[in-house]
Length: 88
Image 1 (cartoon, one colour):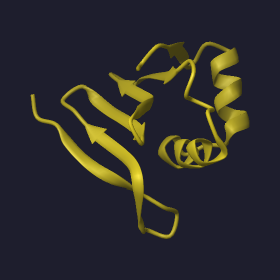
Image 2: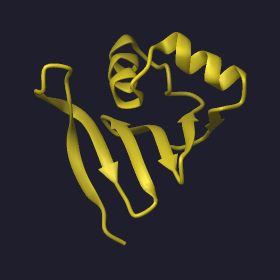
Image 3: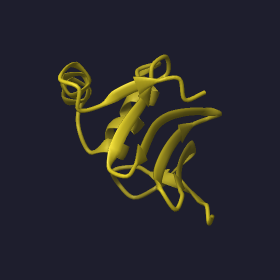
Image 4: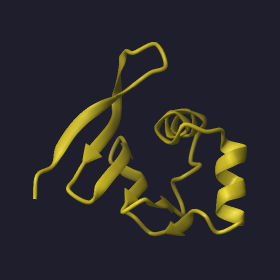
C-alpha cells in the first residue's frame, strides 16, 4: 500500500501548516494536527463524530477539503449521505 502525505493548500494556493491530506490506495484522509477529521474511502465519506466540527479552524479547512460549506456538510450528515464514526 502506497501512502502519500501533503499539506492542505489554502484557497490562495499556500500550504497550510498542521493540515494534511493523506492519499492511500483506497482514498483520501483529511487530518488536522493529530486528529483525523474526514475519511473518503471508495467514494464514501465518513467524518469523525467528535472532531468533524471541533473548531472554526478545523471547519474552515474541512470545508476546503470537501469543497462545501458547514451547512452543506450538516445536511449530508442529516440525510445519510455522510456517516459519523470514531476515526481517532
